[in-house]
Image 1 (cartoon, rainbow, N blue to C red):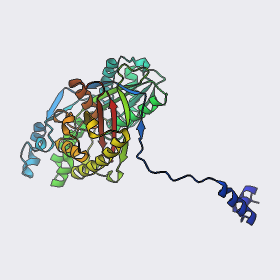
Image 2: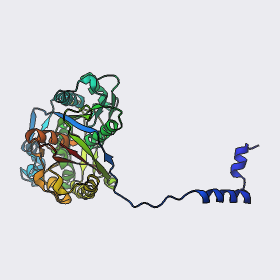
Image 3: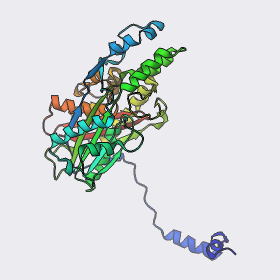
Image 4: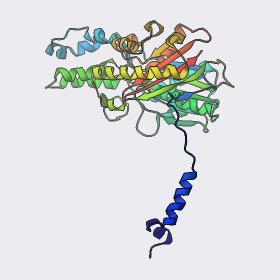
Length: 389
């Protein structure tokens, strides 16, 4: 015998039941249609950017060095030396010493950010590790950095991974916690390591028997990747020593382009790790600039800014062509930008915050300056954040 609820569920309702239901429905007020407004996806009143810290590897690898290794490939396709720098604007990039893990690099940057901010390790209530590079699949690399820095056991810790946008996603996550009053002080770190990727790419190109021009073209972006580490302390304005406010921003996504840049499986970052990446650079650039243009329009509307209101900008560092096309897409004066790709290459999630840290260090903005962080990453996703210095 079916339970009573089943009988009621499957039995045909009576006419009275229909009428009763109709009366109830009639009494429910209808919500008026509201006009669509561009949402301010991130809107903060109490979040401050306290201090950056960064670390750079000592080993410098020039584009000319890479091309000398690839001489047999260049000869096969009748390519002239100097092509890599000519096409990208990247003169050199850096590698960590063999045996340096992402957590080691992140720890160095994190320690420097804490020292610069005056925040003690025991005051850190949240730690986010946000780079593409991680020590291993499990546990979270944040747990290793947490241990290295001697942070308290009450700290919230986890990894965030979203290609070259990880650090900005981390800023949003930490800012949300600060704005909600869940934490007052937090630390974001990222350490990218490129030695294994560049080494594997060179080896694969040299060993490939049936290498085509398209294969070489799809591997080209992998030769631009560099290494570095960066960290940022963020606080609630009630404990801030800087009053550099994060105002908010927007995020937009064009995931139909998720296949344009694909990395290999996560193999960790031991010295013998083998990894590769395939990139359709031209289509990625087209899709990225189109997405940036749409995001930029919503970003200005959300913050109530015009292009004239923005004093300084920092964008993801891919290369010269990307920088030029990017600023054309958003119709913004390129002179407001500061770049590092020429001597650091593309350092993944570290690129934008590291460039901002170095730019602020070399050319400190005046109080009240409006600063735009214009991030984009494969997938495709775009995050744009605004701060008032």
